[in-house]
Structures are given as C-alpha cells and as structure tokens.
Amino acid sequence: MKKQRSFIRFSLMVMAAGVLLTACKKTEEPKAVEKKPVKVILVEAELPPKLLKPELPPLFEDIERRTFQFFWDTTNEQNGMAVDRYPSRPFASIASVGFALTVYPIGYENGWISREQAVQRTLTTLRFLRDLPVGPQRTGRAGYKGFYYHFLDMQKGLRYDQWVELSSVDTALLMMGVLFAQSYYEGDTADEKEIRQIADTLYRRVDWPWMQQRKPLISMGWYPERGFIQHDWMGYNEGMMVYLLALGSPTHPVEPDAWQEWTRTYNKDWGVYYGQEYLAFGPLFAHQYNHVWIDFRDIQDQYMREHGIDYFLNSRRATLAQREYAIDNPMKWKEYGENVWGLTASDGPQNTTQDYRGEQRQFFHYRTRGAGLFEAFDDGTIAPTAAVSSIVFAPEVVIPATQEMHKRFGDFLYSSYGFLDSFNPSFNYDIPLKTGRMIPNRGWVASDYIGIDQGAIVTMIANYRNEFVWNVMKKNKYIRTGLERAGFTGGWLTPEGETQPLPKKDEQAANARALGIAESRAAAAEAQSTPPQRQPQQPE
Image (cartoon, rainbow, N blue to C red; front, side, top):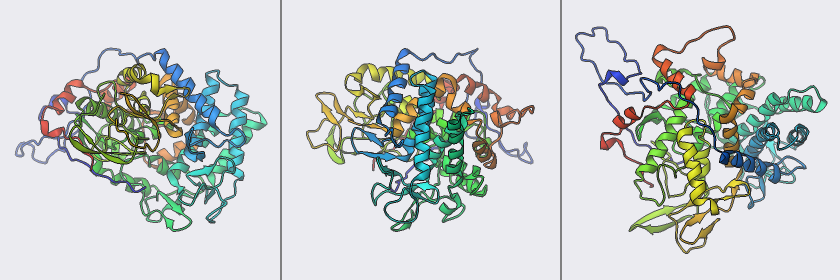
C-alpha cells in the first residue's frame, strides 16, 4: 500500500541557555558575531532525586496473560502458523509468527506453559518454515530468496493470494522472532540445539542485497507478477529493523552505506510537535516495533549522536506528543483526553464520509492513523495497543491510560484475549460496517484481535517488567553486528572492560532515561507557549 506522507514544519528558537543541551557551532570570531538561537532538546536540566519506576498494577498481569493466550490458542499447533487476525480472515501473517516465537518463552517464564511446550511449538514452527517450497513461481510457494510472503495459508503455508507481496519488513519481523528463539533456547537437548541450527539457517538464507534494486536503499518488497515494489524503505519508520538485519547477515550483508543513506532521508522528519522535539512518524507502531527486540537505551548511531538523544528517548517523545495531541483534541472527537489516546495502524469502522459536528469527515476501515509531523490521520479511532505498547517509554502516562480505558470501555472492549483492536466513540452512523459492531450510545468497536498489535502489547509489558526480550537479544551476535556496522556505539555495545562515557551534554539525559521519566514539563510548556507551533495535521 502506497504511503501518503505529509508533514508540518515547526521551528523552535529560544535564547535561554539554561535549558540548552545541544551544542552550538563555534564561530571563528565569537566577539564579532551575534550569537544565534538554536533548537532546544527537551531534557530536564536537573533530575528529581531517586525517582522509582512505577509498579505495574494487577491489570497488566491479566493483559499479559490474556494476550499470550491469544497466540497459544489461535496459532496452528500442527505447523506454527500464527493468524493475522482473529476471529475473522483465516490466513497467517509471517510478522505474527515472529511475535509468536517471541511470546512462547514469555509464557514459560511466567509459568503459563512448560518449557517443553514452548520448545515443541517453536521447533514445529521453524521446521515448517525451513521446509516450505520456495521459488519465483506465482503460486504454490511460500517465499523466494530467503524472504517470505506477507500472508500465508494457515494450513499449507503457501502464498495466500496474488495480491500478497514478498515483504522485506514482515520477513524482518519474522527473523526477529527467529533470532530471539536462537538466543533464548540455549539448552543441550537435541531439540534446543535443532532450534538454534534451523534459526541460523533461516536467517542466513535471506538475500538482502537482492532487495536493493535502487542501491543502497532496500525495497519494500516484490511481486512475481510485476517485480519489485517501486518504493524503498526511507524516512524514519519500522524499516529500521530491515537495515539492521541486512547489515548483520553473515552470508548476504548489505554495505554500511545502506544505513547512512537511509538516515539521510530522516532530515525532513525531525521537528517539534506538541512540545516535543523528535524524529517523527505519526503512527506509534513505528516507534515501538524495533524496540520490542532491541534495547536502544544509551546506544546511538551518528544521527542520534548529532541530535543528543537516542531512539528510545525519541520514542518516549513521540508517545508524549501523541498524548498531548489527544488532550488538545483539535478535531473534537468524543472521549479523547489525557487517559484516552492511542493512534496507530488499526481497524476502523468503514471507508465512508459522514457529517460530524457540521463538517464532512472521512472514516476508514484498516489504515495507518497517527498524529505527528507527517503520516498524520485521525478519524476518532483509538487503538489500545498504541498506548499499552509504549509502557517502556512513558509508564507514568501509559499505566493510567490503560486503566482508564479498561475501566470506562472494558465491558465491550476487553474480552478473552485482552483488548480488542480498536474503538471509535465518535462513529454513530447507521450504515453497513466493514467489520466490528455498534454499541448503543457508545460508538463502534472492533470485532477482531490483530496479531502484530497483540504481539507488541505482551512483549513490551515483558520488557517493562524485567527487560526480558531485550536481555535475550543482547546475546545475539547478528544483532550486535548489525548495530555496530550501522555505527551504533555506547551503552551495552561498549566492550566489556572499556568505559565509553556519553558526551557531557547528554549525561543527564542518560540518567533520566534510566529512570524512565526524563522529560521536563517546564520545557514542554515553554515549547508550546507560542500558538503557531501547535498545528495538528488535518485529514486530507
């Protein structure tokens, strides 16, 4: 699907040196040249003393258990294929399979299944993926050149239909789960050894340079009917994992200039939105998926070194900006507020235009929704996964939002497998629906759970509790290689025995990230003090 990208440029110029954490370029004659204002990086000048990470209330254990159960119950136990969505549309998503492979050990670690159950489900999945027929043919194949088709038949594991693409990013999501399994199952049993061996085989056979039809960027995918998709991964988005996995490959790696070229396409995406200065992408999923498997705290590539933050703090800012957008609620949607928010790719009621408060408003079924400098579209549809999956970035706002949405809407939004995908309190029209159902006087609610949305919820809660997924993936040599070839340094990438302090200007930011509540409310308020800076994107 071709992405419509639009953005609003903001500029924030301040003179107060007290909040400045970015470095000004020194002039040769400082006395003769007037000092120019620079953009502010919104990080606290002073940290509160010994702030503790908020405890998770019991609700989150229930969410985690129910969401795990979604994968355990709906996956085909005969071959490991995980559903794209449930209960409708009976096909598998390879991205969902990647999440499922990550979720099974979470179930074991929590005592919900045995280790043997996790091992057998994982081994069944990997064997099936390894043995599926592959090739350039239009039908009867699961993939080609190590990549897999986005959607596969739940029983046979073959390309579901001719509209399904050979997907680079969904293969990347699958491979993240494959490499997680490789690093988690370290036992000496024959089964766990086989898991590690098959995982290695699957990753090694992905021919990443083949996807570089317009080098050094990587294409979004390929169709046997018409060739490569005429769009590459560029601009800040979930494509980060595609490049990192391609850089880490021991058999078919891309050159480091792929990462350099990709980050060069970032520049239009950096700006200020609702008081937060960050690398923007409207839907929150792009700020979350890469962080499911990789701990980006305190590690930086060249782009982030130049901007004085890291990708983790960037995702925090994106989360806080979207919450502020909901509080401001420029489009006057029902129920939006400080504890009811969350825009991402999700289900919606229908593709239709309806009158809302005297204006013609567009509503959609499934599409990307977001608030930011670009990729901004909002039709009043809220996805709980957008908020809950940001738990690691901003627990102090995610916890109350999750509790509030459960309390106020849980009677129709929260069910056997946790939160249904989305709901829209503003949609109250008597028209045929694409999916979901109408709740009298409450609006529309989805009828499906979506695999990738469920996966982000359970894995991010696990990371918040004890950094579980992150710690496992830190052991994977391919992930480390990919990060290092992309130019990441610092943090957990620092070789043992060496000390590599962050630049002085960023020391407080590093401490703040460790506490998980870094942002300065005072700085954010100052950034929002000028009305022209607060211009939310309107739907086209």
